[in-house]
Image 1 (cartoon, rainbow, N blue to C red):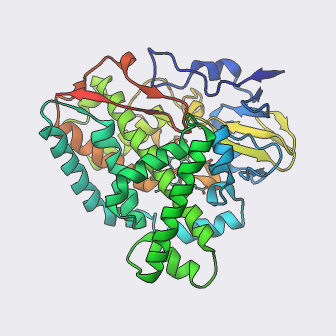
Image 2: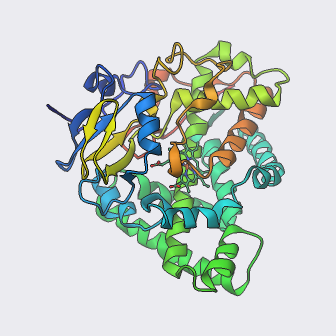
Length: 403
Ligand code: HEM
């Protein structure tokens, strides 16, 4: 039987905007893979169990290449714009491994440690600016968006002065709410911007990722200008909306769970802070539109035969609420012993490259915010806040707070 999934992801109930839509679990009541038909009529298998999601993401018989027949693309805008890009997100090995290796040294724990002081300083100054506003602020605009924008611009070497324009373009590109033509226009502008920047880095290299790509990969002809542009545009987009949304949603989650927030108020051990961030990532698991794959050989997942050419929608956010993996999964518990096992960063060869970096950003945010503004509270009830579920990442358009 095929379930209709034209409205994907289904709406979340107003009373529980921080949990995956119950409609997804209802589609797969036993947890076994179910067949669904999505927005463009393409059918795919919906994978919701933790064990099945992990095995599917690690299986070399699945492809991430949207050009392959049967690939279940997320939305019309995605199909027209980002789905056309050739970068590590849409490449299988060996090309994927080669690109990932090129970037690896800019995403190590060590590199993140080097960036920590700059991130800390930025977050302190954003909290200063929030406090200077008086007693109310919008934590999306005033706090959550500027943090990753600064970090990613610094990492890549994108001038900070371009950040507002960049943030705007990347949101249009990644949102499935905008018309495909608008998304395509924004992507073309980003493309032209990055092309200019890469040539500038080639002429005058600095200590940043784009300069390294220009010097080490572009000059010897290992990759083309087009490859560098697509890769860098992907990094800009991948690192921006994800982290910003995780910051605003995690602040919200803690504001509505005062018992958990209290655990972050005093002097917090770095180890506890890291665990708290893992639990927030698990609980919120914001990449809610599913990891998209297509089987290239016949295979079995969770007892279900998946034939070559059939698509997979692997719901890592639903898997992160699987009670066979996480006891009492709908509870936010910053002391959870196995929180680190979450799949918010995906899994297998395509696991998020920016995981250490975004963890560092979130640790610094929650290590500072609750100490500096202990009386922070929502300016509106949870059910009246503006959440959006029609982008590839779940998020909030604003987060009004006061103190
Ligand atoms: C909280 C923030 C973030 C979340 C929740 C997140 C989530 C994810 C997920 C789920 C994937 C896997 C996609 C798939 O398998 O289909 C992924 C891949 C990726 N992410 Fe992130 N991400 C975050 C931040 C970042 C940052 C800050 C960067 C870079 C600056 C980044 C760069 C990447 C890249 C390059 C990939 C592709 C890896 C590959 O295909 O091998 N991400 N991310």
